[in-house]
Image 1 (tube, rainbow, N blue to C red):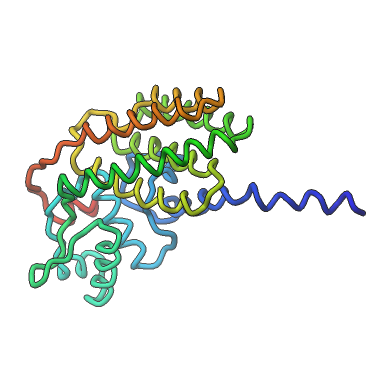
Image 2: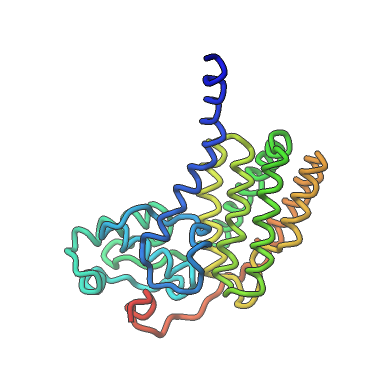
Length: 271
């Protein structure tokens, strides 16, 4: 009788499972992007859950930015989006406001919406905040990670290594970002995890917009080194590797981009 009650502590380990549930929307969103296989679609931070028209518009714009079809400063005319998605202006405006809140687009008075173009100073501050946050996360992950957690991380690293040689740069960047989010789960602090989700999303946007083509945005070897040090219980060593890893990611960003020459429908993957 008393033995059937103790197994109820299972709800705690399920906290990380929420992150997987939050990542599931990509499979149901039916986005027009074929670069990433279905089993890895959940790696991209920032996509919304649901299949309503607002979610589909949001995810299509977001995905198009992250795969570099929509470049910084590209105009997103309300009338064109209404035609492409078959919706009213009120719906498009609501989605654009949400995208602006998430720093994906900028709403300019009397000029409409354009894809966001983070400044060098804004980029510096975002990466600075992320380095501080991930240092705290790595220390907590070193304290709390179980052998099963570390085995799961190593399995993820194997997928990363395969993706580096198989998929496109945006697809690889998605899987690399998921490593950082998985590490945040192991810190067992949902508040830090939520903050990192926002920062990873913003960093991924910056990298997708400005990183030179053909360069891996997150080095697999550095991820593997972080896991090795966590397994050894060397929190400060893992923090130092993560710090340099994120500094190198910031240095790889090139804050210039060519003006787009395609139609909006083509840049959204709808033509």
